Length: 153
Image (cartoon, one colour):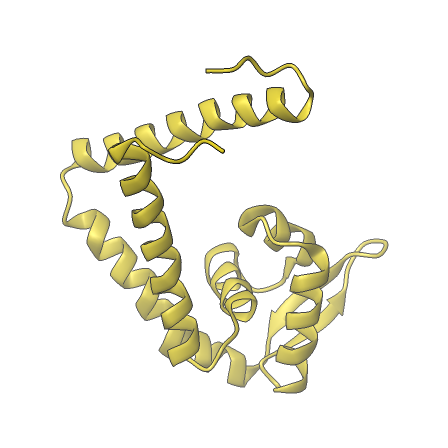
């Protein structure tokens, strides 16, 4: 078995895990599961009434996970579903949900924006550019691996 030997990869994985842990800690402190936090964050970002499939696509979380969390948030009185076209269901915040998002989720978005504001435009553009580049190259290699056409490095 080949081990991870490159400093850059180890550091990238550590930073990625630390970011993931930070969002998990935020969700826990707010009394939410990770998926419930994702739903409320998406409603904050996409607007009230967005579709479940849009949240799944944005967050790369399975439909089943999001659906289970929607049901729990519905029972807590945070949101409700409104029929849309065909089988589409719009996810809408209740008054209590709007207040919760305003008090708990919006400050997280504001902190994230503050971090980007603390960077120069060049730094923030470079951060995004390099993350996209890594993702695109990794996606290509994963595709080749899964299709059986990967070349050994």
